[in-house]
Amino acid sequence: MADMDTGMRIGPVSAAPLTVIDRHPPAPDVLAAVRGGLAQQPRQLPAWLLYDRRGSELFAEICRQPEYTLTATELALLRHHAGPLCAGCPAGTLVVEFGAGSVEKVSPLLEALAAPAYLAVDISASALQAVGRRLQAAHPAVPMLGLCADYGTLPDLPLPADWRDRPRLGFFPGSSLGNFDPAEACRFLAGLRPLLGSRGQLLIGIDQPRDPAAIEAAYDDRAGVTAAFELNVLHRLRRELGAEVDPDGFRYRATWEADRSRVAMALVSIGRQRLRLADLEVVFSDGEPLITEYSYKYAPAAFLELAARAGWQGLDRRCDDADGFSVHRLQPLAAAPDCSASAD
Ligand SMILES: C[S@@+](CC[C@H](N)C(=O)[O-])C[C@H]1O[C@@H](n2cnc3c(N)ncnc32)[C@H](O)[C@@H]1O
Image (cartoon, rainbow, N blue to C red; front, side):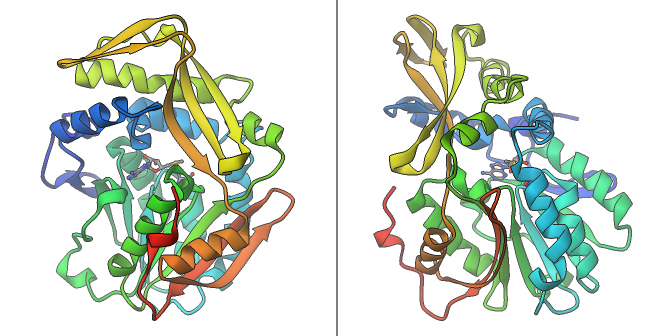
């Protein structure tokens, strides 16, 4: 089977036990996104490019590093508060998870809901298959589907006819909203309203600013797993897009930028060197960063302001203040979203 992480396959594919609908961006769109990012200053790659088969494996390993406390904290919140977080969701609710790399996080929700169904949306076909196999084994009575797609550009949810009337609960864990800048985050959240419907609710995990040293350590663990994860994107560029680039010519760096409330994750060029991709040649100067992802952090009040601009109202928040992490439960506001005030 061709690797769907490359975007080389279009159309539904079945890989027992999870059926996956393939809407991965096709290879020319991946190339265009990479070219666009390399033309920016600072140069930047799309964050979703980090998640091919190897990237998804490395991310799972990051979640086990002692410095990366986010996963254990969010998991504990979900396990302890699944009941109230699912309050008001009728029987038959469809859970739509955006970025479905973790089996453990959605399980308490599937257990708290009556007769749920589950749609996993992820850019990584291999992550979907790994999660799907384990989830189906843990919840054999729950109907499940996968959707391999970029959740940042999803126009609709391609659901089977008998799923379309199910009320929807969006689930966006892992503080993954932080990969978008605030303006993109507002547009993304606003775009979830039509996807989840007027009766829909959204559960979202959000990480807040805290001790800079702890944040930088979380994104640059001592075992070097995050560094390997971020550098893997250069191997992916070579393997899938035929790029000429030397991954050993870059070192990984994570920097907390307090004025933007974000961590910048970058591959820093060791010396002057060239990257060639199709007809494009990019020259990196010594020390020049190639941004692989940002992780924006929001204090609870700042997040709720952003959510309100995007047309969502907070209903509940379960938090671990010591670790600066919250799971918010949101419902659509009557007012239309207005993201014009969200700066990038
Ligand atoms: C930071 S991991 C979080 C995984 C898991 N949800 C958790 O909370 O531990 C991000 C997940 O979202 C997926 N992902 C990242 N960007 C995406 C995008 N633009 N569209 C769809 N999936 C994406 C990745 O493949 C990965 O499984």
